[in-house]
Length: 240
Image 1 (tube, one colour):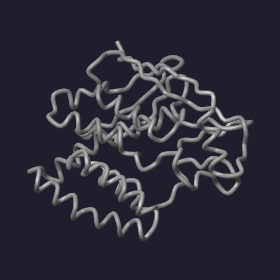
Image 2 (cartoon, one colour):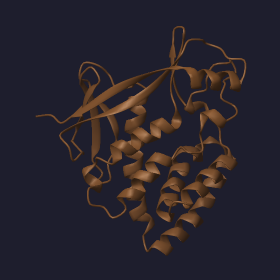
Image 3 (cartoon, helix red, strand yellow):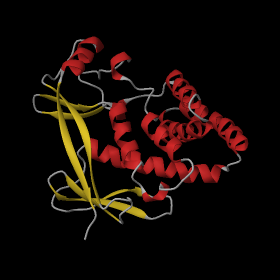
């Protein structure tokens, strides 16, 4: 989960909700407006964190008893395998993108993670061969997914600076670097503008936890399930 530490508790955005936001952003991109694999890209974005489901997962707490932010997670081969198999049940295209994402996120976590990520190259190449697509083409598609993932994380983490200061998102598939800046409360613009619409709104569900320490995973899961949820409306608007 994505955790923001407050004075008397925490704000949490669930991992799969963050992925849903990434998918909703991806769906609006000019880059994939008429792409034949558009639905696969959306599915991959929406499911790239499906291995992480807070309500059925162990190890949610840090050593102080607080909820563990996603950046504190360690490599778990079983989780990666389950995520990859579930992706493959949708399509090989989705599985290739998820394999790219596992490599991007996990490779540097440990020697075991690096070895596992190396092993995914064979699977990626096999699926690409079956689909008559190159790894270079799939890398370009993954760049789109990674861009949306990065933008979603910036929003969920409340990382965008105030007063119109720009923050780098990531490079797009054409190699151009994109920047986000705030134009008003919960209103942002991106330069250059990558979307088909000149203005649109997305929602972010934020769960408020009013305590700093939990006894075990079950107590935190119950608190997340019963927590007060605020819905933040985020508007993206193209500069005139």
